[in-house]
Structures are given as C-alpha cells and as structure tokens.
Length: 149
Image 1 (cartoon, rainbow, N blue to C red):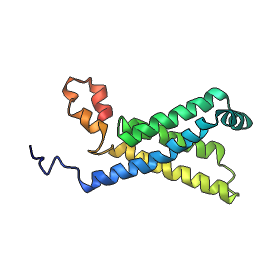
Image 2: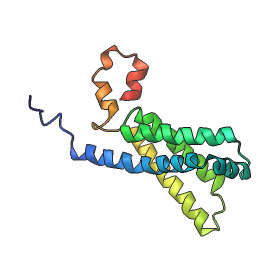
Image 3: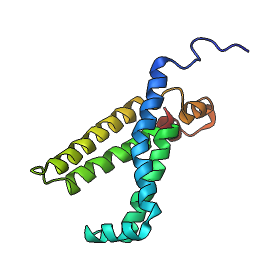
C-alpha cells in the first residue's frame, strides 16, 4: 500500500526529530555520567548541600524525561520537566555571573530551557511515539488525549 504524501514525514518533522535527539543527548549523557560513579555523585551533591535521594531523583529525571523527548513519548511533559529543571539549575547553581564560566552555564541552561519550552508547545512532530498513539485515541480518556496532542 502506498503512503500518501500527507502521511509522509515532512522536513519539519525530520528537523524536530533531530532537535529532540540533540536536546535529549545532554541529559542522557549527564545522567549516565552521574550514575556511572554514583559514589562521586553523592559526594558532589553533599558538597552542594543536597541529599543522595535528590541525586537519584536527578538521574531518574534526566533519564526519564531525556528518553521521553528523544522518543517522542509524552514529549510535551518530558520537555516541560526538563525546561523547569534547567531553569532551576540556572537560578540555583549558576548565579555567580561575574565568573565567565558560570555565566556561560547560566546562559546555556536558559537556552536549553527555551528549546524545551518550544518543544513543549510544538509537540514532537509526526516521527514520534506520541503520533503512533494518537492514531488510537478514540478509546483513551480525554486527559491522555490532551497530553498526546
């Protein structure tokens, strides 16, 4: 069966996929790095006055929301979570703007948050698990349909 032109992914959807993958990569890489040496991660968090459970929650958030954005599964929710995470990180940990390095991290976090907010509004596009699930929405509760659209 031939696919109609309207069912084929458009260039915009390919660009959304590439953008989602690039945005999620930083979170998946960081989560892997934190998890790979969990003892050092706990030590770093402790030096910042943060608990081990918060370190584990950070790793879980970065993996879960990172995969959400990458795969396009509940991508709006994943993108929103990561946008808020980036804003919190910028405002809590990168506030010494007199330091060029801290300023760079602050601006990077704001830029990533901006990209995630755009993704939260635009959705993942047609190359996503959300799109596959939307085809079966007639039997879903309205709240789930809203999250997938």
